Length: 301
Image (cartoon, rainbow, N blue to C red; front, side, top):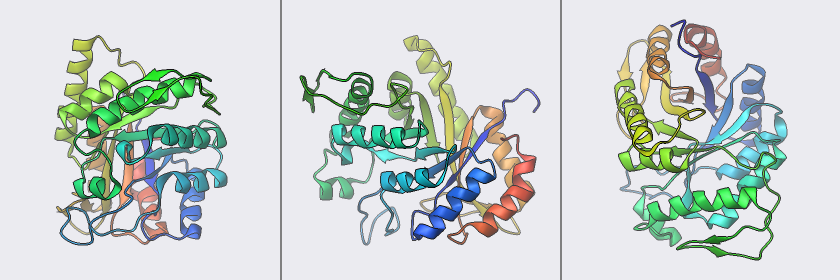
């Protein structure tokens, strides 16, 4: 373990059903306790019945992070993940650049092409061309974020002679590509600054990390500074239980959770997003136990 770089830990904000006070409490507590990042998810609409995802009501990701940004100073602010084709790419690039400016450069953009066809249809978003739209949007953001008068000639956006700003102070915002398919991993290597997986066991994540290395070697992409991150849904119980269903969560005693999370670190995951399940919205009981009984036994900081 001594030769493994410590893993950074992030916590998901109580974006589903949480109140302003609950979100503020978790954001402040996480920063004070040394968590590396705060995370939010993205759905504008979900099917009332018959969908693969529960009929949740979830706060919009960017305003939620803006609220958290105003209450904190150093903790990173991240998305798991923005569904890029749901929004105009220029407008989204502007919102992200503004959030990055207001937070003094703390934003990490987890981005993906999406999967929920009913949501695409309701929004009039391009489901059949979602991959192409996402690829183009990421290229467009790089231009917008680095040039005061960007020029871009794509399938979905043509831009010249127009002023864009403010731009991120660093000239860029890290974009970590979400998804578990080989196409998503290829997008991460070709266009992203990292890869963000979700709801997989360590052996499945190890397979994707292998894909990252293979594609990088084939394309000549350096992986220096390339982030490997993953999202898990975990909670506490007296015995090991796999929830199945949409979240594919793990409920277990603290020692078993610590051992499970450590396996991700050992295969090369640099940042782990913890999404609590079976917890109160204020997350106090979960965080009390996690910080006292799990975190000290994981190679994390």
